[in-house]
Image 1 (cartoon, helix red, strand yellow):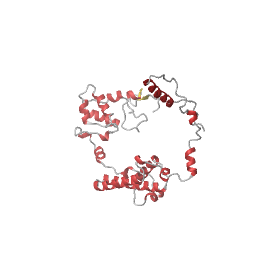
Image 2: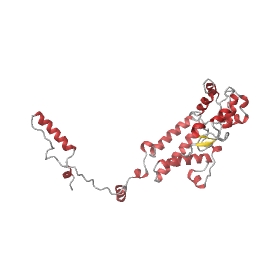
Image 3: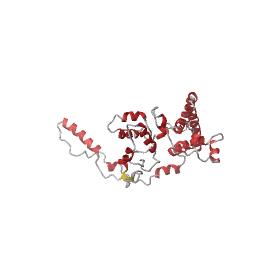
Length: 292
């Protein structure tokens, strides 16, 4: 949201109101760029009779927010039941829930329409959710026998690893591709409930991850794994930050000289001798020590 924009128009009363103060959070950030509902708090409050749970459920359906029976029961015991209920919808566990995520607990069976029940009980597969173009290059890269979802997951993991690591050598690239395939296989085993197979695949995943040097603890770039193999590379490393001139030291006496003086004075005091006010002349001078 733009910093200049602090007000917006309510879709019901058509009045300009403060975005953060007068509008509740929406269930999805896609609804509006400011992440707020299009109807203001006052108008939404006017639509609800908190003594009637069906009234609240109908209002929540209109703004695509959930009806939560447990939160409703808590809210009607408060001084401001509707405000309390809407604050509960803004908590972490409810922040992105929509009307289809409602929990009626059998209180309003007439509102649990067939469409709601079907969507609530439906289990979506990755193949139904993923739609992207599979090119011949991707098939050549990952092999035959994979569906769109498999290739999408492989590509997503591969690209994220490429972005977070400096992978340059062919050996590193092949290790990463193998890691992606093992990661896909272990995720499938876990989703299917094959715990034993998942454990075996997870062990292989960790072995490949360690051998490829892609763990965060031992992450290294392609140049680090292959080493510096020529004088030109050494020179490039030396000069990559530009010419660094010799530091010009102008102080002839440093803290070491002062320490020598304090040590000498300690001994002199024990012997009741006169103490030094300056370091001894024969201490090594900084400018002499580094003189070329």
